[in-house]
Length: 131
Image 1: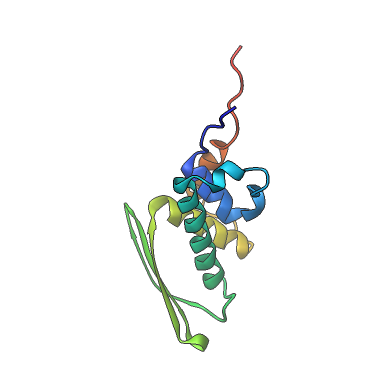
Image 2: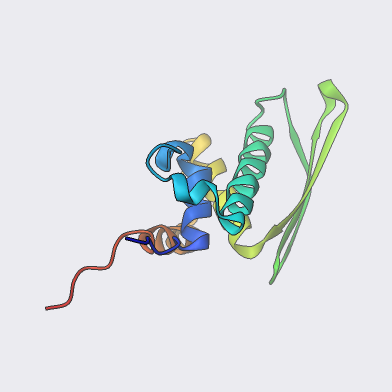
């Protein structure tokens, strides 16, 4: 039986917010498909952005954030390390990062942002059989 490829946005959100949700031993085919491998790699990059913003590498400062209809450009500085991280995010990636940062700070995310991420996560659930 061939499994349908998971929703790209739902998979990305899942792998950023709960990275262990798709283990290799249960979802092996997902680890062989190039498109899904790119999604996994991007999720790892976004987790790094979140960790940096939350201060995992030392006190971080959000130097600038430029939001557009297409996404965002984040510039985060970690002065202790002399590190500046610049990230170009799509609109959905921006939403996922915002939710992850809010959760990391134990703050409620903006409702509209959380709703978009929740909608993508819901697309990962198997469709109910029609009767």
